[in-house]
Picture 1 (cartoon, rainbow, N blue to C red):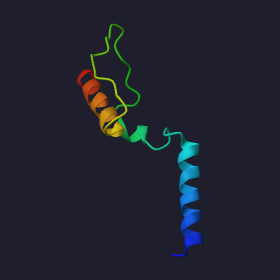
Picture 2 (picture 1 turned 180 degrees about the vertical axis):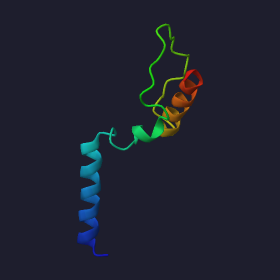
Picture 3 (picture 1 turned 120 degrees about the vertical axis):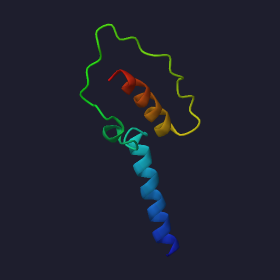
Length: 72
């Protein structure tokens, strides 16, 4: 691969990531088994540790979804 071609690919990847702002990277539709589920009126959010910016954010979101699925 030529240096120019590699530089173009890196530029494209950087632009794509900058444009997505991280929101487009996760497939939220694929994470939830019951996307149209309604929470009960008296539902109280369980105490779930907040994501602190380290580790795998997809795993963290999946953990929250799995925890909430206990009430589905």
